[in-house]
Amino acid sequence: MTPNREDYLKLILELGGDQEKISNKQIVSGLNISAASVSEMITKLVKEGLVDHTPYQGVQLTQAGLVNASSLIRRHRLWEVFLVEHLQYSWNEVHDDAEVLEHVTSKKLAERLEDYLSHPMYCPHGGMIPKADEPIREQKRHTLTSYPIGTKVRIARVLDEKELLDYLVSLDLQIHEIYTISDIADYEGPITIENETKKLAVSFKAASTIFVDQLEGCDQ
Ligand SMILES: [Zn+2]
Image (tube, rainbow, N blue to C red; front, side, top):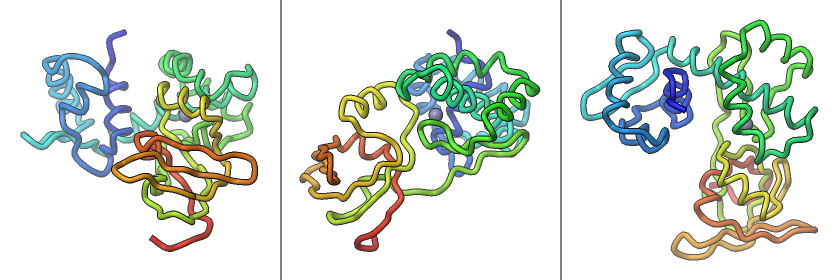
């Protein structure tokens, strides 16, 4: 499937492009396409006023680009909630189907879906669901790798990435669970977290994409 302009905008947003500049290189690896196609699309997006481009630095979303990307994320995440709550998908299965559905969802359908689901605030991965025509405001959180041993944390959000989610399912780690960090291995080794029922060693790579709320323990 060739990524369309909305896929670009969504990826730029997911990489943090509402706050800072994202390089073409990051977009190339995120969408798995040639550098030439990326620069061609960037030129189009600049003309349409959806991104600002600074040579040698990268692109950043304009307000219009942000609203556009937010509406796609809104549709994607509403479908995720539907698939998990009503069609018994697990959180590592929803991505591909939501990815297709988001592109064929009219504004009206998204509104009806939102009503039907009783206005959910978050997707199954803990991502915020923006309201219609509103830019997304993802809550600022730190990752599991940011806290010292002894900190009590709640798993609040994980990146919506198939490989990561499959890994988390294999670990039996779920969103909203509460753990205490009990060990941090040297040299970016695994981070061990535990509670009364589970003790998990989470790879550093995965831990750096898991966002948590700090409940107790040492301040950063
Ligand atoms: Zn999600």
